[in-house]
Length: 241
Ligand SMILES: NC(=O)c1ccc[n+]([C@@H]2O[C@H](COP(=O)([O-])OP(=O)(O)OC[C@H]3O[C@@H](n4cnc5c(N)ncnc54)[C@H](OP(=O)(O)O)[C@@H]3O)[C@@H](O)[C@H]2O)c1
Picture 1 (cartoon, rainbow, N blue to C red):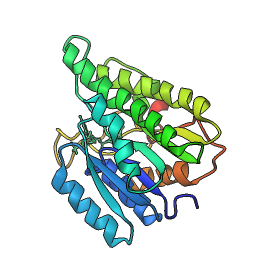
Picture 2: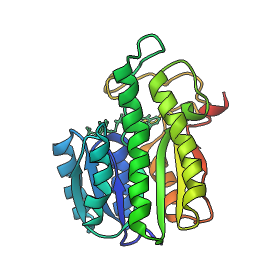
Picture 3: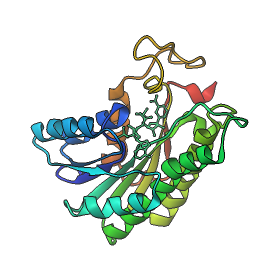
C-alpha cells in the first residue's frame, strides 16, 4: 500500500470533487497537502476533517493563474514531508465558444488547466530525485472528444491528456502519470445547487457518485505501478455516444 503514510498534494482540494478526493486519500492512510485558491474557510474545514481521520494536513494557497505560484507549490508541500502523489484537480470551466472566448479567457484556461499541472509535475518529479511517485490529472471525457462547447476548457483538457501521455513516457519508471476523464459528476459550480438535469448522452442514465471517482483515484494512486499513460473514463459511457 504505497499510499499508507505517504503525502499527496491535491490542487483545488477545498470543495466539490477535490474535497472528496482529499478525504478518500486520508481514509486510505495518506497525509494530504491541501491546495486552495479562494476557498480558505472550506480548506480549513477540510484540514480539520483530515486530521480527525488521524492524518496530517497542510494548507497551501496559490493562484494557479500565476506560473510562479504554481511552480512554488511543490516545494512548499515537500517541506511538510516527502511527496508521493500529485493530483492535478484545480480547473477553470467556463461556457465559452469560439466567438465569445477572449484572449484573457484563453490564457486563464491554459494557465490553470495546463501550465500549472505541467509546472507542478516538473517540480514534483524533480523533488522525488529518482524516488517512486504518482501523478493523476483530472481530465474530462471532452478531452478526447473535443467539441464546440466550453472551447478553451476543452482544448486545455485535450492538451492535458497529451501531457499525461508524454510525461508518462518521460518520467518512467519512477513516476506513473495517469488521467481520470470524468463525465457527469457534479453540476457546474455556477448552475443550480440541486435538481440539475442530467446532460444528454450518458448511457449510465445518472450522475456519478463521488465515491466512484474516489475509488478510481485510489486505484491510480495505490494500484499497479505498471499502469501509466492511461486515461480512465469515469463518465458512465459518455465518451462512447
Ligand atoms: N464536476 C464534474 O462533473 C466534472 C466533469 C468533468 C471533469 N471534471 C474535472 O474534475 C476536476 C474537479 O471538478 P470540480 O467540478 O470539482 O472543479 P471546480 O469546482 O470547477 O474547480 C475546482 C477548484 O479549482 C480551483 N481553482 C480554479 N481556478 C483556480 C486558480 N486560478 N487558482 C487556484 N485554484 C483555482 C478552485 O479552488 P478555490 O475554490 O479554492 O478557489 C476550485 O474550487 C476538474 O479538473 C474538472 O475539470 C469535473
